[in-house]
Every structure is written in C-alpha cells, then in structure tokens.
Length: 479
Image 1: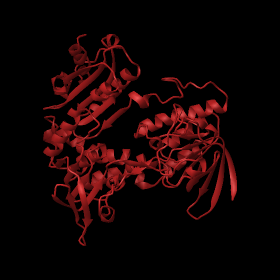
Image 2: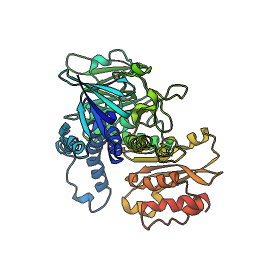
Image 3: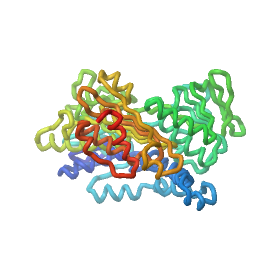
Image 4: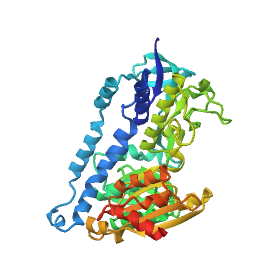
C-alpha cells in the first residue's frame, strides 16, 4: 500500500461530491474524490439529464400541436430513434471523459475504486484490479455516495429481472408493454415518457399518483396519463411477479388481477449507498441513512459528532431531500464550512446562515416533468397545517390568465399559494400546467426571502405572460 494526504477526501463523484470538492479547492484546500462508477453520478447518466431528454421531445411536440400555425406544420409523430439518440448524447453515451477532464482542470485528484473508511481521517480505495491506496484527510471526509433504487420483497420480482430507474433511463428501445410499480415522481415521469414513445403502459399506484404533492397535481396528472392511454390503477398493489421462458412478465395484484408486460419498472423509493463504506469502523451501521447536524456533520443519535467531527454527509445519503439540486446546495454549504473550520474562521450555522442548509426544511423547489408539469416549492397546504402554521390557501385557474391563453389553445392549469397568516408571507406554492417550470424560481425567492405580501404587491408581472398569475393570486387574497 501507499498513501496520499489531502485536506479533504470525498467519497462519491456525483454532482454532490463534485461540488463539495470544487468548493474546498476554491477555498484554498486540496481535495481528492473517490468514485467506483462513472464520474458525474446518477444524475448525469441515469436520472436528471437522460430522463428529461426522454420527456422533452414529446413535450415540444405537444406544445406545437396546441398552437395554430405551428400545429399545421407538424406532419408526423415522434421519431423514437431520434429521441433515444438525443437522450444518449445528454448521457454522454455513458462515458465520463468530460467529467474527468473537469476534475483535472479544477485541481481535484480522482481515485477510482471502492472507498471504505478505516478511521476518522482515512479512506482506503480498492481499485478494480485489487490494488489499494490509503488516502489521509487532514480536515474532513465527506460521504456523497447517493442512493439506489429500492426493490420491495414481492415474491418472484427479483428473479423477473425488473427495471429500476437506471434501466428505464438507459433503455435502448421502448417496450411494447411496460408495467410500472409506483406512483411517485419517477413513476409518473416514466409513464409519461414511455406512453409518448409508443409503449402500452400500466401504472400500479398503490398510494395514488404523486401522493406527496398537492391533491390537484396528482389528479391532473392522473387524468392526463389516462388520456394518453396509460392504464392507471389507483390503490393497486403487486402481490407476485414472474418472467416466463418467452420473456413476458406476469404480475398478479393483491385483488387477483393479472397483468402481462414485456418489462416491469419498479420505482417505489430509494435506499442509501452506505453498505460497503466501512461505517462500522466509526460505530455506524452499514446500509443505513446517515444523520447530520445543521452543518451536515454526521452525528450519533444523541447529536454527538462522529469521527472527531470530521465526517460529513451530503446529498441523498443523509435523507434530508432526495433531489440533485438540493444535494448540490448542501454540497456548497459543506465545502464552505469545512474551509471555515480548517482556517478557524467564523461558522455561520444559524437559520439561513451560509453554512447551514436551511432550505432543506421548508423551501425545497421541485419540478415534475409530467404532462402537465408540476412545479412546487415549500409546504403543501396539509403539510403547513401539520406544522402548526395558521394558513390561508389561495387558488387560481391558470387558464384565466391572459398569457396562458396566448401560450397555447386550450391551456389548462392551476396555481395555489399557501400563506402564513401570522407573518403574512408565502410558505408554499404549487403550479400545474404546461411549461410552469420556468415560473417556479420567482416563488422560491418569495418563500426563501420571506417577502411580505404587502411588498409582493409591488412586484408587477409583465403583461401578457403566465406570470400574471401572481397578480391574480394577490387580488384573490385581497390586496
């Protein structure tokens, strides 16, 4: 064995790990990053980028068909091969040369292999050829290994070779029949994508479609999926599955129905990638989610920092928010606080402080790229009520906004604003409709900035745009 010393060692080279390393290097420290798969992680190759590429072509076609003049210019259907080819380009054809080049240009050392913690400040890396190197961290070890698809213990399912989100994102063709177990974000997006690509899709949504979103969001997506030919089975659970000698997957539901498919996609949740990290060396249980404090240091159940306070966890692995952009937000906070502590600089760990990931609690933005798009930030009405906030909920029909009528014929959508009545600020905002993703950041700024409604009244939306919904919501509220 040989050894290499760095200020910070990061395990996991996805977007989160890359951002941690980048921040500490920008802060004047040295960093090494350990990766056992492709540099760039899940988002680059099997999630955010390729899945949105799969969805975008169909969305553009729908948009063109909703505008006279453009509608007449559309003479055919989706070119599936072209859609998949564009997807491949956004996944960099599953090669990480570009990401590796970025690490090198940023002064971040890359060690390929499985990283395992052997002490509070040491990580052993085992390469594919069995060679080992021990990396020593002067100031911090950061776990940014993300999560993987969770497979339920349904009899026969594992032997049926199910797809997870990875196989769906990288599929070389659209299956003739696709069964999807799950009703959350990924399930809904992939049902939208593969229905547009020509698959006959059956969605088994035990807990409903988008159960964590505002109810109207799930209702509108359910209706749209059914209109596109998807068989949406609410409240339905798979009891067993098996793949026969011809390749057909047979699924039996708990109510006795039988479903046949060429592929079955399972998207019911995630599990942390902490099984083979050597967590037991620090008294932690392998395979579990990691608990962190306000500055994302890993802590025990009683709040005591693990590893002399030098072990951090950012991204999915700490289970605060399983979204790439939120993980990158955490990464910036982690990188900056490590630099501050290394240089004995003040740590700003109070609410909305530079070194605290406060937005994880009540200001998380999310876009679901279904038809219609769902864009939200902050709390739903029910979550705000459960948090003890005295709320007033304001709803408005997006179709009644002049800009929406110009955007597309037959535009349908809905907006909801959740107001904290004691502070007169917005704590939640949800939009459902075509192309509402680009409207979300204004709401995010309002929630994070805790902008009083009296001040928002002076934020005049340009006419005629869909953003005029802000004015209509405030008028409905009574400003």
